[in-house]
Image (cartoon, rainbow, N blue to C red; front, side, top):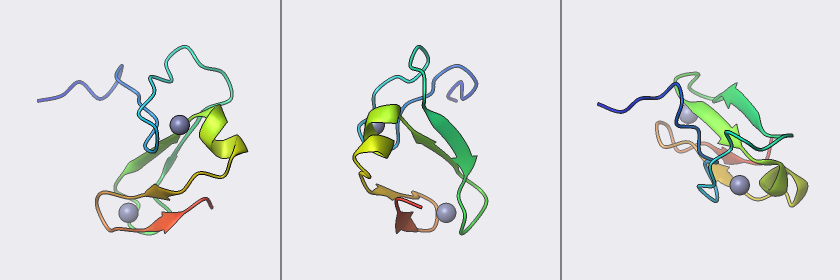
Length: 60
Ligand SMILES: [Zn+2]
Ligand SMILES: [Zn+2]
């Protein structure tokens, strides 16, 4: 079992966002089951992410 509360990593680049400002966490807009975590850097560069649950892709 993983501790999901304190281990927050960007879904795209896997960086630990715990100490990063400007990162965002939101539910997958498609399946609403997965937390999508994005760091400031990936948001800035519009790096794609993919939901591991439903395969939804997007920067939005
Ligand atoms: Zn990132
Ligand atoms: Zn999803």
